[in-house]
Image (cartoon, rainbow over all chains, first blue to last red; front, top):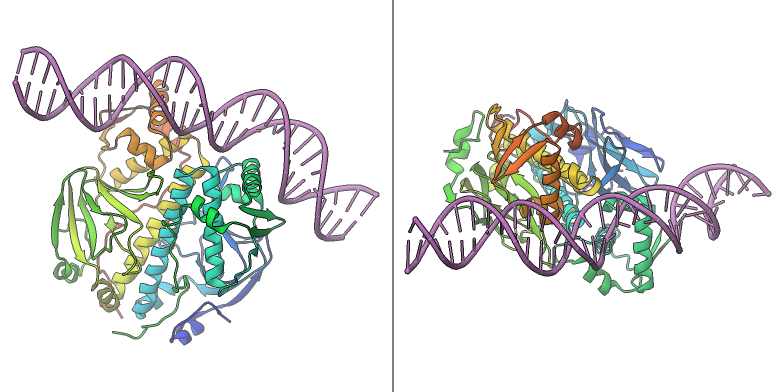
Length: 239
Length: 239
DNA sequence: CGGGTGTTTGAATAATGTCAAACCGAGTGG
DNA sequence: CCACTCGGTTTGACATTATTCAAACACCCG
């Protein structure tokens, strides 16, 4: 089912939904250049949203956790500039893109929620941009990891473990932070030697969260909240 | 008047609008930490949207030209993470924030357009992020200037001048690109020596646009369009 | 046991930042 | 009209940060 959905008028979206989809780690949900005819709600697993440059370099612009809404392109006909790749096996809830705007016109609650989802995504991307544009490698790393931890905490309802699974390779971290994979490695080593954290074999253990948060300069935290990033139709039939 | 508005049901927004506002260069439309009670449509002038880090550094996340919609925060109560500063004297159309969501619920066309505006802003910010995260100083500069030129072309209906006013100081360019102002200067010198462009006293003259676009790796162009980024209520009462 | 992918490290190099001084042009008060 | 100041630009010398290349290593999987 569409777990991350919430709210009353779930039925509207239920009937609208095309079905679920399972993808293996490494697969692309969609790729740059495509004309996307679907929309997705990420039910389970991790997905990275990225841009491809003609130089061959890749910039990861978002790390999507369960509850994320993926693939909304404002201009139907225009091909996508970004792609979405599965970091893990992934479960998606699939909607048709074409009729979506019509549905949104019928249920103002839906389109308003969509606007808010996009607005939150914008805030998060601004955060990411500020991170990459204005901080040192060490700070970027700390900020990224803090953001991910916050996302997991939100999702997984208080898993207070100090040991978390992070299915990112070091070069993917580099692609997210605008650093080479080699330097990512050195940065992680420094964090390890400072007894801040240990990231090993896809598992993150935080030893000194206070220090980590300090490096991350939290305070310009990403958007968050009890608010999901997925869609429901709360006030659907409302005037 | 609210020049950048378009579409039929202008009246709805007209009655909704609080009024116009003129601000001098250097003023802040709003500042980080504020709880914003207004929304803005940029009628005339240039505005930069930025994040402030506790280190004191600043990251410019967007350069807004006339037609931009500013200040939409999805969560009413939450204080803003970003600010908006006028680069030039500026004219704004002001709307009340509080009742905006209600209006959007009444006119689905409005909220859907809002969603698309936010989605386009997201795409642009992803573009900016990819620029800062994955390109060299020279390429970043080229990309930024190309993006600005494209924006001006869109706005000013084919001003084919090769001489354009760019009211950005070199350190502001640095804040946008994640570079020091000194290095911005050297980068501009290089572009000048390569006969690509001359940026002097707030005036940009492009000598070799092809080369500039090549450096900018256009192809992952920012969103554009005949589509304004401002709001109208086209299909307002549409069911 | 072998191969592949990801990690770790060192050494050399390139890109960019910092500091400090000089310069330039526009406005301002004498 | 001049001298001054101020914000912005330009340049040089130098420090630092991050990249590249290359090799060794570790681990998982078949």
